[in-house]
Image (cartoon, rainbow, N blue to C red; front, side, top):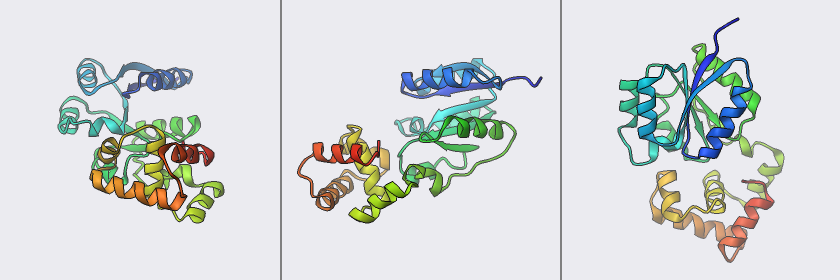
Length: 210
């Protein structure tokens, strides 16, 4: 029997990390050796623990700690699998050379497990536009794009508005200016013929964008 793959999880949302840990622990392939909810705990833990694959939320790299990549390189020599949500492609490209694998948080359990095993075995899974927007791949949601003439970026903004992010937070997450986000908001309001944020939130739920 092959030894279990030692995993360390890093996500700022404790409930998500704990749920992911419980799910992966059910597999005979994995051993969860730790969880971190912030950058400092992550570095401190990796200095003490031996880990095969680090599964880390992409947002860790865009929370003001611009030295995280260097600190990880100095601390950790194992594989890195990055989980991402609707964060901008331009941001993810900045860390693409640093990761062994990218997996969307919209993926299912089977896909994640397969990617972890492939990553551990040395296979690199590159960042792709298809994986970034897999949640828009259904004909149902493609119809949304065609019907309302929305762009992929505008759909990202709709999602983030529905998730209660402020314009400044959306700007930071998408690596654009707050002025640009305000322009996206105006375009969305015009295209959807909405009057307020509540209408945009209802739209996001109706079209299963969140």
